[in-house]
Length: 121
Image (spheres, one colour):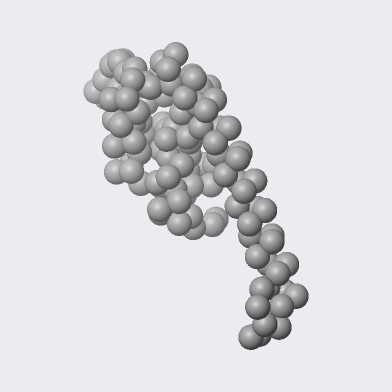
């Protein structure tokens, strides 16, 4: 599996968490395992929980405790209306960013491939 740049991952963590929660309520470790199975193998619990706290403090998530048959109560998270709206915004921003990066890197690659060393680009 690929290793993702930790700084890039940190930048999109909110989008990943909001997206995962758009499918329904989840508890923290369940989100960790879901994201790991989506290809983020190196994602640490110590990264996800602070991200959830930030989103909750921003009013994008609500949380509640639910008893577990296999241990202590688990804290579940769900999107608020503001969180659903923010998810739409972040998805659009992500798409715009991906398109811009693809354009910039394709232009840089084609320019580099056709420019001899020492020639201006």
